[in-house]
Image 1 (cartoon, rainbow, N blue to C red):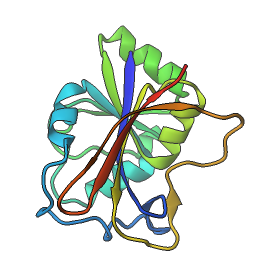
Image 2: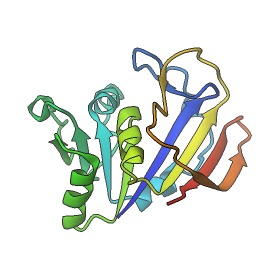
Image 3: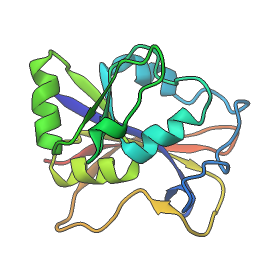
Length: 174
């Protein structure tokens, strides 16, 4: 199974404010920067509970009918919105990958800081796309946390956009 990350960070490496807020992200007027194509390439999403709760504040379920796995230690507390194909699991990254593989899922989108960190530590991410937003927010939730060992990446490409977004794609070196 292939697992990919597509995420935005501030220039100082944060994916959200300390309270989880994303108010520093650009609005809908920013140009398309590959997310639509990326999203079409994945079969399912694996997100953490905090990311799930943030997505619920968007008003409309952002993932359509794509299967979404919400990782949480309290699966019964996750209430999917109407129409969402959503399952809560209390499982390790390896257990999630094994379950989704058994269902025929071939490509997952992993999102949420802690979830990304856990999948990286388990060696289950192959591709990382990071879009840097030209703003410093000073503090917040970092994309990467403490590691027990180095994780090496190979640069695939970098693209700058007129809005100031800079997107880099990396492949995880096995």
